[in-house]
Length: 282
Image 1 (spheres, rainbow, N blue to C red):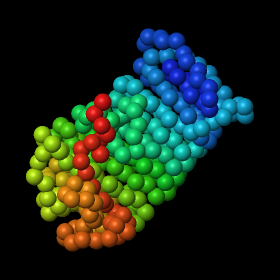
Image 2: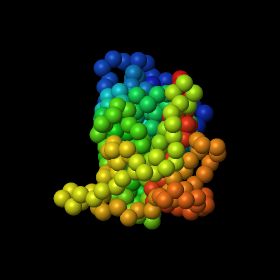
Image 3: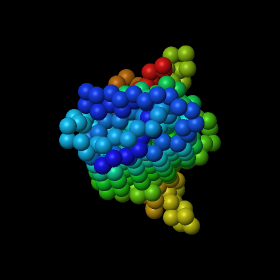
Image 4: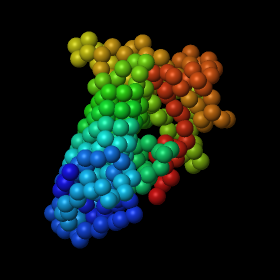
């Protein structure tokens, strides 16, 4: 299957195809039709037509990077990692166990969520994420609308948004007992140290159902974080504290629980050092 590609560097197996810079390229449309393609996109590039069905190509997996404009990024039937960048992006994972990021840079680390560098770089342009079939992970920025699709999906959101009073993210198809919601609670260390207790974090978590819109709002300390479809006020909740003296798990009452119990909860509130949430500042 051939497709038109606006990019600077395409990595496929051991080959690298580099295009010349062109001006005026503002929107990327990238689609590939075969499993496990590795693609790295750059907005400043020439147009290239690549046939990913060429049997001679050694295809590794997908890696799509958007830019600061409104991108349409579509994955493959393999396990894709797609980064929206800035702008109001539409990201579709397709089949496979995909990772979709609302707002990100070219850097990638398994232990950061949402953005490498600083919290202010979290995309707030209102992206649309669709995981498609498979067990996907979706990292939601401010105002992001996310659909996991078929499979057991894991959604990541921030428990503290920057700036304050940012628009809540939205999950359209959360299924209790199958999907999970991880709310990252970044805790500043060093010069920015703040008092933090497990009780404060648990007490700050609030969920409320709105019958008119048929949605459940999740708040942290009065800040709207994410809305879920339907009445989800009876979800199981666990708290993971990796800040105060080592990794510990607690239930909603503040009682200790096992790691196995905690990891099976519908909602996991995670307190971790800031750099573990967003990556080292670069």
